[in-house]
Amino acid sequence: MSTPPNLANTTHHAACNVVVIGAGAIGAAATYALARRGERVLLLEQEQVGHPFGSSHGGSRIFRYTHPTSAEASLMPAMAALWRELEAESNEQLLDMCGGLFIARPGDPFLADATAVLDGLAMPYERLDAAAMAIRYPQFRLHDDEFALFQPRSGILAASRSVAAMVRCAQRAGAILRTGCRVQSITPHTAGVTLTINDHGVAQTISAERVVIAAGPWARRLLEPLLTTRLPLKVTHQQVAYYRAGDIERWSSRRAPIYIFSNEPHVYGFPIFERPGYVKVALELLDTEVDPNAPRSVRQPEIDALSATVAARLTGIDPTPVSVDLCLYTETPDRAFIIDRHPEHPNIVFAAGMSGRGFKFAIGLGQLLAHLASTPAGAYDHPFWRPQFALQNHALGAPAPTFAPRDI
Picture 1: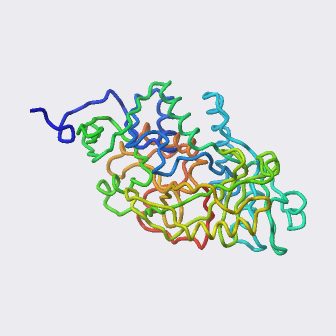
Picture 2: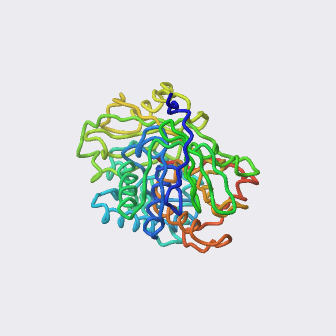
């Protein structure tokens, strides 16, 4: 009698130096960077590339230079250049620099900090009052006491297509992709790392010198058995809605920018980009913690609230949604990223808590992860390294800010 597939116990040793876990934006970027370095890299994905159950799928993500700290804002010119480089290599248009608006009231703390950062880095922006906005961007209704900060070096990244392009280019450089492989455990030892996986119901082990963990909402499950401290990661349910635009030209990315309302409710959105004739709008959800493996459905009260905001704030948009997509955020309390080596096993490198704001940085943070995985312990000399990424900052716990806008 043959052994049932789900009970099979075979051993597989991949001919690889590095295993990357997770083919979302960060894992795809790390694989792309490692393969271009000449590493023999194996990328494991528990679903398929571009699957709709995590944080990196969909047609669009915001790309913006407007950040409240120079640590993040100073990365943006390099990120834009790297996305353009990927466009050239993949022969795909991935980044639409349509400009970006932050809409707020005077004294808004986020924009006060962001404006100072833009000034310090000599990055261009304009401040538009409600009257100027009515003339220049009549797509938006502002209250009389509101203003908008317009930053021209902002726009839209094609999310799923960007991830697919990084994976495809990594494969051309020699990377191996295995889908339908769920990692069950990671065991470091003197000779490297051993992973146990479930490959379409078949138990296997994989050995490699190093591993990069970029598992998104599933990061805690893989990382906590390896660490002595509990990571402050929260996975939340998020949803985005699509609305029909009455004036297609007015809402095209040639005439309408991306936008974020810094006031309550914290709504953000896109011009027509991924679906002809439709705009994408979302309301950030804070208290919606979920199990990433549990079934989820649309939260209708939040969609109703979003539609009310669309009716009140956006012109020429039918406020009845035609469809709603779901995704997940995985964040730390202060929304800072965790990117580091394991403190005792530096051949284990990881990134976590990237959701909401991470996609725009992904292509550069993939290079940082590749550097951390390819250099000695203690080496933090990559230009994209920032001290706030260090694991020790999050193990100690940092206070959550009153508000830091998130964008998808």
